[in-house]
Structure formats: structure tokens, C-alpha cells
Length: 474
Image (cartoon, one colour):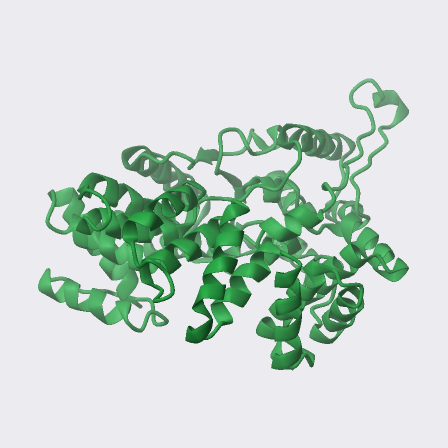
């Protein structure tokens, strides 16, 4: 077991992994993940320090909360806040670092405070010479946009905080913490003599997932929202034949949601049942299942037919995915579908329609016509749109050349780990101030160590050689 464990909510493992890589750069022995029931107690016992990344999803995750309870009790918890005061008040007696700041110098100060706290708990001390590289990786991991689940955060944190306080007053041990969370609710009756200290607290289930959520949110975020009480409700509804609940069960089996075994075969059974009811969400999720698990048994023809049917039913993500499958001879139809998705205020649809306007032989091939759609999508946080718009401003295509605007947009996309934007941002920075040049080198180094980036990786390595530097990917 590594000395430091970084915990995040299900679906936000990339944040924990990125922060772990940053701390590994400094020399700390770090692992990361989204804790599962079987992992909570062993990790809490073995790790010297547990760093918990608090987001709305973390506040809604029972096993993240259980991990925090046990780490706090063992005086080994450090809280990372991605928004001001987002961590439950019951844990505020432990060190907490606000890393929500977008200002580089402010982030550096806060990150150094985190390193100082780690130095107190970990047998390994941070290497200050590696701080610039670690800062770049940590910012990239923590400062990319977070899609927030619906519901009242303040109330949710209050419920959890009161539940945690009750835990410590009553004196629950590890076993009872795990048992309480496993039951799907945190409900603790105080002894009569202490009834005036705290009242019984019940943590309520997360808000139900709606059809609108399925249409707007990425499927992995939907799966991450499924908690233990919700999983029981989904199973019951699916057995009753409710198409929405069957679709959610399909997704949960596909993504290994809480309370569901990862099983492509089970996922297909539920998707088939909901698709037979002409449910647009299930028809589209069937296409996702085919892409994610080809061995689930859905053929390419079956999956594509369901995707087309979902597009005919105006399901927004199906409009986009089906349009992307159309042949060169069908590009006029593709443009119509992209436009329909864009008109429904979908950022991905706005980006795809903008690209169609700029590039498609069936369209006007007019970058100026694409600008308003790119601008709306970039404002909504769509990284591809931010990158394309940045390039148009950089090159003065369709708009007046504006290097400051281009850099701002590249920065936005780079925070979302958009690798072409990271490369182009580094190209802008390498001829700037000494600080800009150092940032460019750090970006090139990160890109040069990405084996999956077959085009950008060698270009980043070449840039480093030109700058008389190199990448250490060990």
C-alpha cells in the first residue's frame, strides 16, 4: 500500500489520478481511486495519509463519506476543496486546502500548503525542484470543469455533517460505519442521556435521474450518480417494466454502477426491454452498449438501426452520433441533424454544426457562419469548440486576429485535458516571458509522455529538443 491514497467520487477518478501523478512527480508514494465498500477499511488502516477530493459528487457518495469518516477518526485526512467550503463541516478540524482558485500564483501557494501537510504525514518529503512540473499536472487535474448533479448541496452537506457528528458522539467503530453506509442510509439514534446533544439524522437518497438528465449528461456521469438507495429503486422499476428504469439498469450494468455487477449481457437484456417500448433513451443507450461492449451481442446493424430510430425520435445525442455516421453523399442530411441538435442548445451539437459549416462540401464552408455556434458551445465548456474558436482567433480566420482571446480559449480547453489545445497553448507561450517559457516546457513534457497521442507526442518531443530540454517519462 502506498503512503498516500487520493480518493475521489465514482466517475471522477481522473482527478484523483492526475493529482496522484503530480504528487508522484514530487517523490511521494501515491495511489488513487474511487473507494468501493471492500476497499474502505483496508485503505483507511494502511495509508499514512488520505487526501479526499471534495466535489458535489463526493458529498453524494456514501463510500467516499465512509472513507472520510475513518480517515478523520485516525487523524490522517486532508481535504481538497474544488469549491469554497464544499467539504462537510464535520471534517473541518482536519487540514483542508482550497484548490478552486484559477489564479496560477494563488494555486501555487495553496498547492505548496498541501505539500506541507503531506510532509507531516508521509515518510517521504516532497522534492521542491520538481514543483513546476507538479503544479502543471495538479492544475490540469483539479481545475477542469465539473458537471454538478442536481440537488441542494447545502442541505446534503448539512445532512452528512450531522450524521458524521453523530457517529463520533456515539463512538461508532469501523465495522458500524461500514454497516451503516451499506444499509443505504445514515440513521443514528442517540442514547437517551444524550438526546439533547443531537437528534437522529437520516441521509436522504440522491435526486432521481430524469429523462432530461439522460439526454444532457454523459452516461458515465449518470452511472456515478447511482447510489445504493437509488439502485434498489431502479431495480424495482425495471422489474415493473418501466422503460426509464430499464434504461438506467442497462447503463448501471454497463458501467458497474453501485449495486449493479458489470455485465454486458445483463445490460443488453434491460436495453432490449426498454427499446421494445420505443424509448428513445434506451435506443440510444443500445448504441453506446455496442460501442463499449461489442461482446454484449448487439450486432453493428442492430445497434445502428436503434441509433437511427433514436435520431428519428429527436433524441439529442442520437442526432449527433447518427449524423457522424452518414456518408459523404449524405452530408446535407448530416448538416440538418447537427443543426437540430444545435437548436436544442446542445454544446456538442453546436460544435459539430459549426465544423459542418466550416468544412463540409454540402455546407457554405464559411468560418464566419461557424463563429456564433462555437462561441455558445465554448461558453458552455465544450473543449473542442473552445479549441477551434481559439485557432480561428489565432489565425484571423472568420474573425479579426486576437492573440489574447486565442490564448484564453486555449487555456480553457487545456484545463479540460484537450491535447491539441495544450500543444497550441505551449506554442503561444514558448516565445513569451521566462515564466511563459517554463510553462510551455512543462506542457510539452506532459504531452511527450502521453503514449496514446501518436501525432502530438512526437511533435512535443521535437519542440523540447529545440528548446534544449527533454521529457522524463519514468
